[in-house]
Amino acid sequence: MLRLSSVQLFKDLGLDLAPYESRAHWHRFDPEEILVDFDDLSTDVYFLLAGEVRVLMRTASGKEVILDEMKSGELFGELAALDGIKRSANVTALTKGEACVMPAPVFRELVFSNTKIAERLFCLMASRIRELNARFVEQTVLDLRHRLYSELLRLSIPRSDHQGERVITPPPFHHIMAARIGCRREQVTREFTMMSHEGLIERTRGALILRQPEVLKARVAEALREDA
Image (cartoon, rainbow, N blue to C red; front, side, top):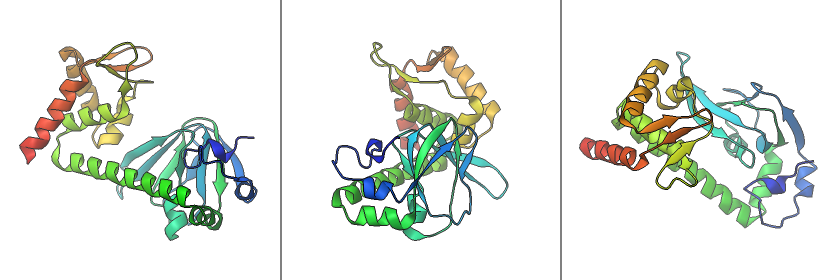
């Protein structure tokens, strides 16, 4: 059975997590399964042991905005466990996977009994707040094109054996990118076409390559300066 020691929050701490694991349950999920939904009153915390999920919010008009995509080793649901307020986002499985589902009282006991875990949790939550703040600023001051540049940079990683390039694997679907930056799929398609013509990106069967990420960074930085 997959254990909590593989989760980043607990990794390399050498803690005996068995007493907490025995008070949680293990849930295997399938693609498109909803693990948490808007306004749920549940307060369990989910530790991803395998698989991937997508976190999104939905406006009153039904428009969906993707907040994040999580992989094994990450956790979600900690806010409801800490404050008891109903869920603010939807979490849906992208792949098959497994999660350790821990009741809120057990999670709080685990966090409050170990300073190192509490410090890691605080740093994780601070990191998420910083990222949301950055995206909020981008949505407020940047146009669609520069929001797309910024999101591509955020999703990408350095490309091995190709110094100066970055890559997104697998290549993102246009409608997913649209949901991430708050626009229509057709607008993303148009921008990708222009970027290809400029030699900024290249799409292969298994990846989207950012050929000139420094140019994208410079354009985003200039757009932010112009707003100021």
